[in-house]
Length: 155
Image (cartoon, rainbow, N blue to C red; front, side, top):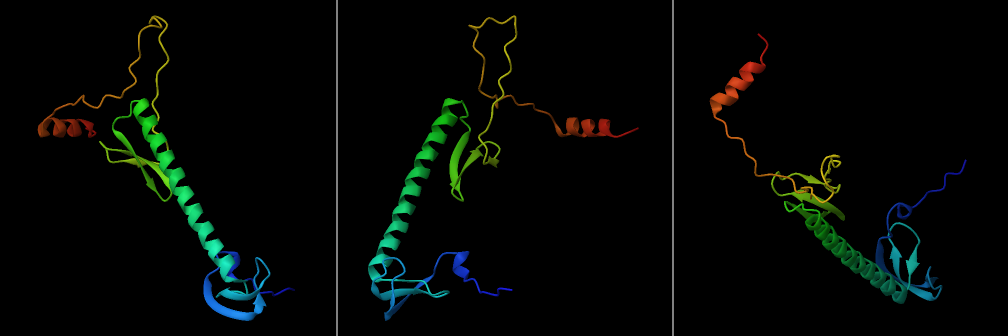
């Protein structure tokens, strides 16, 4: 049986700490004199490769931010074009989240609208209404609600 220990770094990123050594070589460019070594394993980098790696991570973070910002704008434009005026878009955990401002509910899925099939007796020139109606209110008193619940109870 092989009981070789696997460093934590295989599961997560290397945690680099400043540790200057002239006896080791950089694991990236193989030059002598390392400046940074992982605290969990033997992985090490020279100062130049370490700065390059930090710059690469920073550039990737900036590109992801710009990409997410563009996707957010496109999702907002699509909502407005589809007539979802009561919905807004936001980012949560690097995912686009759709929020209904009226009901305060949210969804990671795009809000869908079901447009019924056109009836055969309606001409194709008649426009279909695609905006949902939110202004139809039913007003009732407390006694009306009470009577409705009483009517639901078995006799």
